[in-house]
Amino acid sequence: DIQMTQSPASLSASLGETVSIECLASEGISNDLAWYQQKSGKSPQLLIYAASRLQDGVPSRFSGSGSGTRYSLKISGMQPEDEADYFCQQSYKYPPTFGSGTKLEIK
Amino acid sequence: QVKLQQSGAELVKPGASVKLSCKTSGYTFSTSYMSWFKQIPGQSIEWIGMIYAGDGGTGYNQKFKGKATLTVDTSSSTAYMDLSSLTTEDSAVYFCARPKGGYEDVMDAWGQGASVTVSS
Image 1 (cartoon, each protein chain N blue to C red):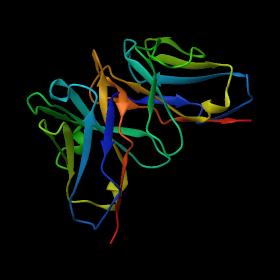
Image 2 (cartoon, rainbow over the protein chains, first blue to last red):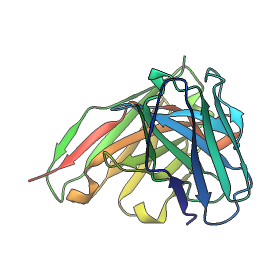
Image 3 (cartoon, one colour):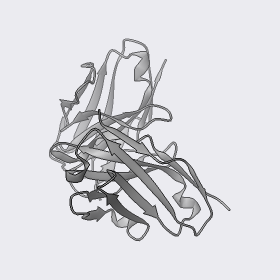
């Protein structure tokens, strides 16, 4: 299975701050990478797919980039509602696998 | 709009089985895939498997073969997952999720989750 190494495990940011979360795949995944946001007690919500495509309805402060084995999610201007867990997921090979998650909190 | 409504929390004894449901609305279920996921609270997410409602064809994560069985009822637009021979390691929240059009392994709609607690 493809291993997804996500960092950092936790992050604290001030309102308006720009934050980045990284995912490193154990092999190349050809931009088949999605990012999800999961608020406490809720189901995951799709933010980004195909590494950089913004899901409909997701604020433009969220962006994704990367290639090969390295990918990142950027939040440009932290908002209170962005406090959540974030997960990357590869869909290049079966089974789809997820990163270990990043807990993002407001400082 | 697209909705995936899952069945409620379950408390089951070790060795028992449980059947979870995921009732859908707002899209054409009969020509769609459905995936299921496991998440232990505070941990990451695991893909269990997927089913194509059109013909009932399935694909499973090797880790969950023999543990999970996926089925559908197209007449009620409902997907089911049977979990068998439950142990405490099966205690988790289980989600159903629908793939985004054109991306069968990217999920753009999720159920609210169903908590399964295995305890004697």
